[in-house]
Image 1 (cartoon, rainbow, N blue to C red):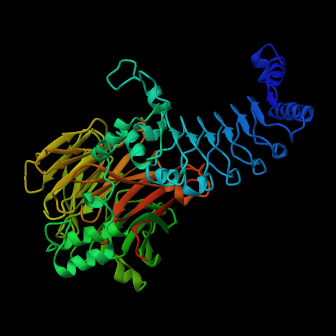
Image 2 (image 1 turned 90 degrees about the vertical axis):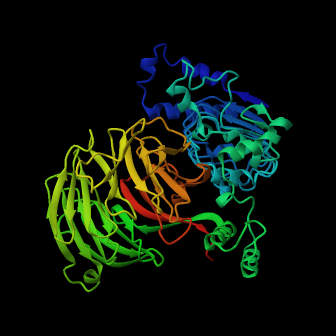
Image 3 (image 1 turned 180 degrees about the vertical axis):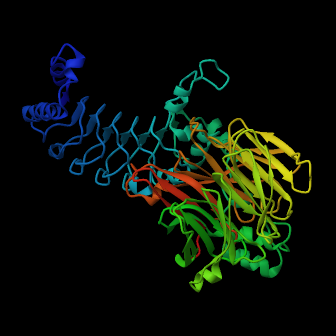
Length: 607
């Protein structure tokens, strides 16, 4: 009752004694030979009696005739090019399925295999698991996902919680003596062979803590002592509930405590923010993603004075102001040329106006009131011959700054409509982003690929930086916390640091790296500065961390936007909604086909 494909492998090896000759065969010839060989096996036995089938051949698909093996209990199809799990719905008695070393991108079509106890999907291209993927697998005891591309914590654990019988889980079959960061044998190849989720500190404790029925993790039995210690280690790295709460709060109790002026959890309810935090803890839900803009957006900014208002510029020089609540365009205009919009900044004292900078060095000021009335909305235009990278206006609307692919910064007087000066050689490489302080009109920060961020004061005629801090790699972005208490730098491959305004390092966030020098990372504060959001251009994950403790809080996988997980997707930019807690937007980029969207993320249940 057990069919092994030794004869088939013998036939393949006999095709030619020279591998290079064998490789010259066309794909069609090989596929025809393969089908015939498997059909020969099928015809040699009665498929209705076969219980175990192991094949080590290059199958392109799971062929429909596998449905005829209705008594099949064990099936292994290893080392092929299978893309989709299919044609197994009639194998109702299937208990063991091994599809190691294929190119499967999604767990699917197993809802009818309710007797399945072991599922091995090692060395496949799976990057995302949803609760629907594992629906109905009530008897699954072992799940192995070694050397896959899974990196999302929250969606993965939510999916695994539905597997009540799960006892054995693996993302990485741990070596007895694995290399360490300080070991000379430690290599990028070893790190890249790990499933990305394994690179988070205390990730083992995360899964042991959340899956109490688990007995074996990554091939190592879980002892009672380790399970006891898991909660402690979990809390050293992860924040389970917002603002360090120890559990989900009942919103009715929160309202009652507020009315009574007392709170059993907090010292006092005199603080409005304390009440907000408790309500947020009550309303946290699975993130809801909504597409706001599809027409080639390249840069966007929220209006910090007008709720639900966002402006975005496109790669074609178009400007659109949208209402993020209704998802409607409020007004729109064009720069008159097809240069990409790379810089946007709203005025603070007159929030109906904003600045837009194009990649050719042209900077314009627009009035949304004129845009709404279909009159010429352009109030001012300047042009300097440089490739613009960033533009930002100070909190009093007096000055704005522009940076480009140079070591210099341009200073403009907004009221007079003229360039005041050029600050020369502020960095040793081009300046990626500059940002003014939210409350100090002369203080600003710059970030550069020279690996440094610097804090400056326009009142200092010597233009010596207040402080200079270095990262290990080039800095992509810099920004201030809403209260100006901190400055945050974002360097390549998830190197995010937080400094006090006197230059002291406050936090170095523990964010898994992908070991890619093109993984340009951007981070931003949420509206009250309690959390930061982090995204990178080689990952589909947006992560959230506490800005006070550095603990990991949540991650959102942008693959939830896509029906097909094979499409490469990544984060190009992000911003926190200035009026809504736990809401932000992401500039999402798709590689095939090349396109971008702005997506809003809401983590609170507003229904």
